[in-house]
Image 1 (tube, rainbow, N blue to C red):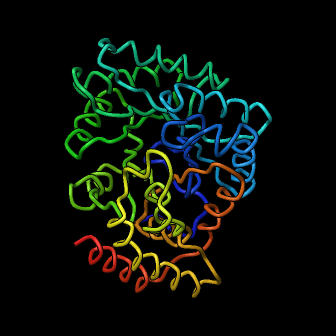
Image 2: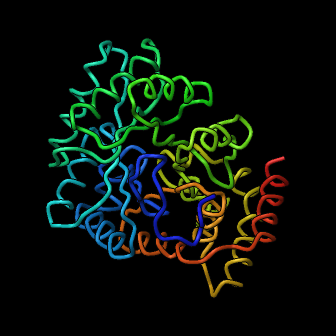
Length: 315
């Protein structure tokens, strides 16, 4: 079991250590969902990166499809300023990518945007057809053998797909480092579909994306004040109303820990589940707020109270 108060944790069985909480960069360069260029700028994300690194958040996760490569470019600019980070990015198995060599080709393009010789963690973004997961698992092993990636993982894979990828990698002597999936107080499918259990079984790290449910768990959205842009369509007024009892409990628990915010309590709940959340940050304020989830832990009773409240709220 990972100590949720630790600043760093192992990345699967790779020998690499990462911060117990990471930084997701989907917001960097993405206008459709996150309105990049309108609500935040290049300067804002550079500050988010700086504040995260200063707070000990070393794991930075991006993907080739975030902002059509813009996220990787922005992260590369931050890295060139001298900061050392554990960099993770992802390969999208588009339908026209039919050969396994496409994976290493895409990784080389990502490395060029990042300004790196190799990435610390390379992941398959989704288990999309037409190619089976075994093809891309072989490609991941190729990337490690070519020195383009220190470790490899998957994202949005089911428990069965994880096992299939693990078996291919194991034959090549490469551990499956991680599975990155959506996990938050408002989305706990991984607890029921076998993914969390399979991660424990294989010794792979579960990396939790959207750990704040795209901002809903920060408490700043209500039925009267919904999120903007595409996210407005994701959460109806009824859904936002149903979340308010949980937000109230998050505030109550946070006050008992010296004024922690709903976001910090939500992230700490995930740390207590022995997973690595990667909340996004558009600016320095959000980065600092996320990082303050580190260095303390909820009590077992508080975790149980949140579990029950979430279940009651979702039915």
